[in-house]
Image (cartoon, rainbow, N blue to C red; front, side, top):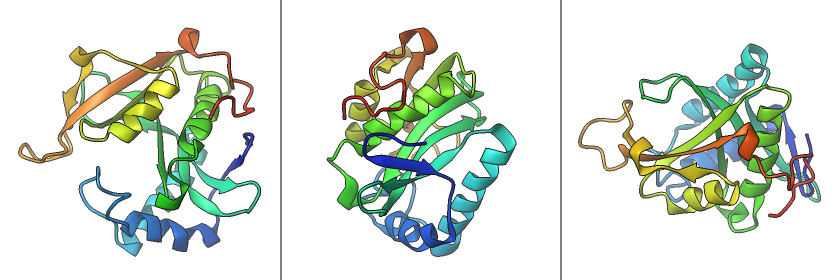
Length: 189
């Protein structure tokens, strides 16, 4: 899949090294329990690739069209952990720090939503993050997603006293999907 500035594709062996570097970056991983080791990062990429075969969608590797540079991932993931709203399809992203602030997450997220509501046949897609992660929440709002504070939750996969356990939940339905960028053109970034 392509957007105005990005190629969203299946994973390649050459993605592993830069993916491990971004997963080891403490700033990139600030709102996750811990940075990932190289083995954990490789296993994440393997699971991401496997999800395409299982579900027909997944977390696409992101490449900047102009340079061919790998910058992270964006896409769709089926969430089944224990929560009032699961199972649910989630749109998510993780980008290398040097790719922040360019609108790439919004551009790729918009294309992933279009795929989710189109080819994948979803009626609703969610996105979630730690309360502290205001940057990702801003992307969710730019995607046209909305938050009802009554949907906020304590992430069941994190220990009770963990500072990242409080999470916000954003939602968007197929009917709410903005028409801008639905065709995969990237729309506003």
